[in-house]
Image (tube, rainbow, N blue to C red; front, side, top):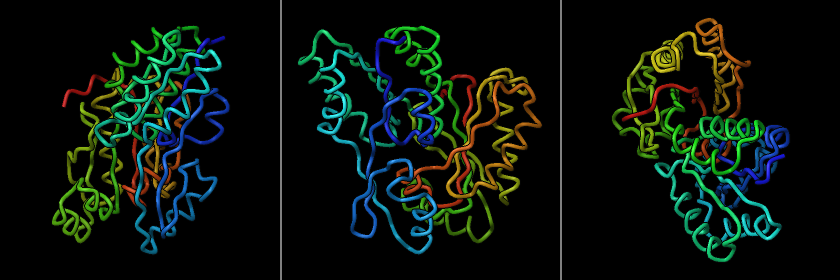
Length: 295
């Protein structure tokens, strides 16, 4: 039995059953919509369907980071109970939350010197971040201790690849991921950008593809190019989508044909309210282990 607690934040975009089955605790981000604050609590307070319906109707959600005090309140009861903690957080390239986590750790290390509080900047997001957390749970269940898992995560986190495409460019434009001109022409010409996470954990446009079906094929080609052992890849593969499950399932079907040795069925998750605030509807993202991301 593991002698530490594995934790993360809600932006792993995994379902509630995942946290229960894998014995993982999580801390919620929050978002504001229509003058009210909501927790990013896996669709409990506001269902994903309702969230994306409101966004389609013009609501502009604004997300808030987890601050140092919230991290203190989350970690301290675990440390007081005599537990060590391994926390994995969303990319510092997308949010300042990891810095708040680091400050909380520094203060709690002084207060509880006998305990271990290990933190990891995943340099990932959504279910790519979730794939790293899931792997940490696998290593824990195999009997690896907190120090060894922490070292493994730091060594291997850039091996998790994230490839995205989207049919709705307005939210990427609003967030500064693509220019206003690119968004306007892309929408007019039905161009879907293909993007990935670089080694700094930031989202980078890589290619422009005409049409949704071709964009889905392109991210499958990127998996063939970058996955460990190419089409013989036998690891896990996760997909997340922002209220476009049919597109996610179409991508999964393409992958299952191209990668017959996948270790497990492809897990498909809905992008939650915080990440969805920045993507809008229409994003499909694929995550897998490959060579180390270097740019």
